[in-house]
Amino acid sequence: MEEIRNIRLSENADSLIIVDQTKLPGALEYIELKSREELFDAISMLKVRGAPAIGIAAAYGYALCAKEDCEEQDFFRRMDDAERYLASSRPTAVNLFWALERMRQTLRKNALLPRNEIVDRLFAEARAIHEEDIASNRRISEFGLELIEDGAGILTHCNAGPLATSRYGTALGPILLGRERGMNFRVYADETRPLLQGARLTAFELQNAGVDVTLICDNMAGQVMKEGRVSAVFIGCDRAARNGDAANKIGSASLAVLARYYRIPFYMFAPLSTVDMDAASGKDIKIEERDPSEVTELYYKERMAPEGVKVYNPAFDVVDHDLITGIVTEEGIVHAPFEENFIKAFQSKKARTEKENAEV
Ligand code: MRU
Image (cartoon, rainbow, N blue to C red; front, side, top):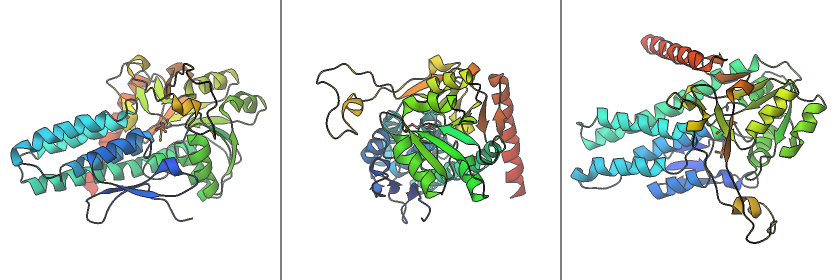
């Protein structure tokens, strides 16, 4: 199967083309997003999803907004509106705000240039965010691969593969890289109620790559661990606070508790763009709450709960830092004490980037 390009700009850079992830695995459909409303809808309805992918889509979306027709004197106000609007599409993954912040800085830095040059600079910044994510994913995959031996059993949750990022993926990156190198892992993919990212996307991506993947319901993870089938848990991350508390798809926190009980290493995977040093702990991370219909009926043939029943549908939870064995970043594996070691990882990234830029 040819490689899926989940996010790309159209030839003449007037629209963003994404895979509509809500249609997978039944149909591989590409859709074109032009207006800010279409971008908002795609992010909030999870047509594009996964923390890094949301950030990349929002960055291109912001650049596209700069191309909208408007009076010269309205331009900066309209861009501020676009930023606020796109930022309100989802609350938990910090990559969204991180990418929009980078785009705003680029706009401000180039504010005195003619409009067409500002637009060029914004597209260049969006491309840089996209390319940096590809490079980070690659490094994360290499670091993650050092944690597992050929034949290992890995349990994963939600989807942190190429669809959720730019390419390679984060938590699935080592598995896919290992497969490319002829290694064979046994992956247990939680289906991930209620939106089934594990069943629809992780199983799809791993199967296509020839990885031995077994789908389980979320409530089977304990049994699979007890049977000794799991050597490590690998999951993604939507926002890590500076003390190491880390938000990811709902169900991640209970997996961490199970892993501790069964003494299984629990790794989260996050590019540094997912680390929010402004959040002191998990308490500062806003947890998205989604529509009750996702629980009662969305993926059922018919409604599976009585009309009018109360539903609580938090889309994420926070894994307490003391349950996390390590957070795999593009600068290596960050262990406790997290704050100190995140600072070192950011310093290492800065030094490495400066060195790479000097060599070009
Ligand atoms: O609601 P989603 O599907 O956007 O949630 C995605 C996750 O929880 C992923 O694990 C996370 O974004 C990391 S993706 C590399």
